[in-house]
Amino acid sequence: MNKQKKSIFEMDIDELKEYCVGLGLPKYIADQVLDWVYKKHQLSIDKMKNISKKNQAVLAEHIDFNIFKNVQSVTSEEENAIKSSCVLEDGNFLECVVLKEKNYNTLCISSQCGCPVDCKFCLTGVVGFKRQLTASEIVKQVVYAFSINQPITNIVFMGMGEPLLNADQVFKAIDMLTHPKLYNISKRNITVSTSGFIKGIEYLKKHDRVVNLAFSVGSADPIKRERIMPVEKRNPIVDFVKVLKEYQSQHNRKLTLEYTLLEGVNDTDYDIKSLINLAKYLNAKINLINLNPHKKIPYKPVSIDKIHAIQSVIKKQKCAVTIRYKKGQDITAACGQLGESYLN
Ligand code: SAH
Ligand code: SF4
Image (cartoon, rainbow, N blue to C red):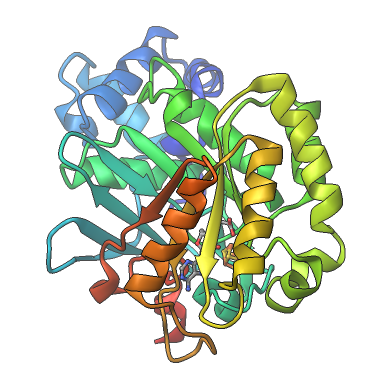
């Protein structure tokens, strides 16, 4: 990218207005540009018809409208998932996945390149941490989905990375994506998933951020948890849950406990009982995810019968529970499978 150029996607409305004025353009040009980009999905300046040729030339000289350097997209066999591996300016990758439902599309997006948290069942953990994503790189994942005719109504931060370790950029991106003049995505349709950082919840409280949260439990037993999720060492689940409960009591937004099932590790009656107690205490819904296996991950998924048996045990205890059916496993687009670009 030309060093003098600023990416359109790194500027929120006020920043863009200021930038336009600095270029000697009238303020209203910013509104016109945003309308073309985020409402009409037009990224070619010369097609922005209500902007004069002269002003188009100024914009072209100073603003970059490119999304990614290169993108490779694959569609799953059942055509219900599209995984995109996107090359960034510095050669790093990010991956995002469109999950197609009948009446809406969810985009599973990345918040970091790789991830430093090192959960032992997660492929992104195997990849390790490369770098933080900027707000603009987070927004671009959504722009890219629209550009391939996949209008997005729901967003889950369940791609690569731990969003609460990159909170400033994640929430700048959320502010842009939910702005009425940009995509106007409902805040209620955005879920931030975390492996459990106490400081992350404190950040939400301090900045008065209200979001749907998903908490990746791994195991409700601290000793077992530490073996599969090293985050437990500095963020003991007992303390994390206290902070989380306080946050929930202030906001009453949706809370989901994500539970990745690992055969023989966290699937005993005792494990499930502990999970149920946790869900009751937090008034949360449980989402069971069977492990997506990979040769680099030393665990196995449970059987289909087992996952259904676990679901009925939870139901009997009057806890809301769903099973997340895998989409796009054939293209390693399912949870915890992102990061293949780095391994290839
Ligand atoms: N870092 C955040 C969000 C990204 S991971 C977090 O951990 O919550 C998104 C979800 O995928 C998490 O719930 C995680 O526990 C789950 N996951 C990770 N690896 C998985 C795997 N191999 N199979 C199934 N789910 C996995
Ligand atoms: Fe990171 Fe989440 Fe994977 Fe853990 S599960 S390594 S926090 S992406």
